[in-house]
Image (cartoon, rainbow, N blue to C red; front, side):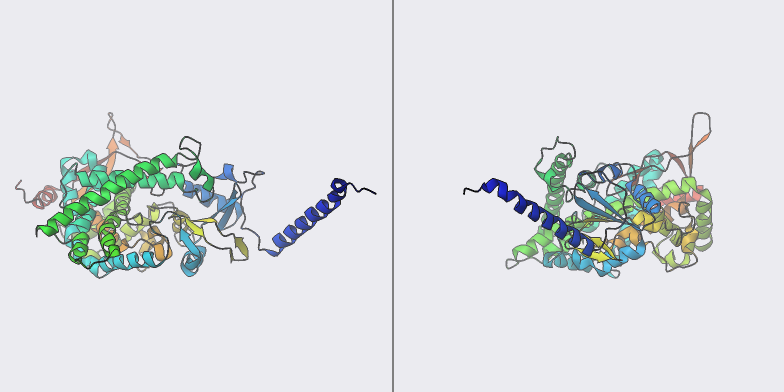
Length: 499
């Protein structure tokens, strides 16, 4: 008797499907559950729950966690996983204690021996001891900022960017940049803008890797066009200043710098990796993983915004400076420990609006279970620094600008403003010095107040910030005037100009 093979196969197929379903159900029951997250849709998951780019995503993620009653939020995006960490404890556990399981999706190098070599090299130039050698240059840059503001107070935000660029490029390459429109600064500005934009647009690439094969005009793949621009500017930034430093060394006219130090160590027997290190290390000094200069720029711009909105903090800081430093000179680094309120004010600037509010995304290499919940391998993990620095159990009234947050405990520091774990900003000590000397110098020399309209009424600026991997305050107007004629004379004297 002939048997219909097709017909008899159906029970076998059905049994296999049933067995597979039961196996998957048992496996999923045996695994730890995901962290809470918003309810998603079939197939696309939580793609419509993601904050809109450019809309202060860090606040949206913090609100999402509060509504769900969890410090860690899990989102499923087209079958991939995004985990947002909103608490300091969880960030410490995941980014510090378990960092061997994490790899950065936006870092310049993956974790490994090469990364360790670069980190060690960075530490040689920017550890807490060696950064003191850069203080005279940071003072010079702060004084240049004071003079630039005096000549063009309406362009103070541009002056801040130029001051930071001057400091970092001088330290990295020994190049004394022009007072305005310096080509090295302009190229670096374009590079930083492209890096920030590409990272903010392409940050979810690991969750949706198929976007890498799509043309740039496909929705969601626009970051590829920006990435091309980033590459172009990045090559220009890396090559041009290094060539200038190398020529200066050859001519015996090089100023001390990271590039000068590395180039001087090269000889005919130097390896290819040493030569690569000599070129890439000073370039990364500016980009700073990606802090560096952008940490300084954003923090000082935030300081000006805070002084416009909170004149009482400005007056108290100025009173402390007048009492300790006097009015016949400008402050210097020797005054730092004698100005506790100013130090607390600078810490509050870093806390109030952190420069990198969502830090840099991590990618989990293997499955991990934390606090009884599963974080699947391949998940993109975001550390919400903004949420941690606005934890009201640590910082009462966190939305207010209150230097008092750091006065009771002088050892308290807004660490998360500089990143997490072994990938924390390697230039954070120098960044602190640059921000502190700029802030104390401006406070000693200028009064900062709201702008006025055509009717003489004060105009209060908004607190809007540009989103992306790096957050800057939107441009805002304000009035900046020398506090006294003596202060104006001190500013002019820093440039060896007779008034």
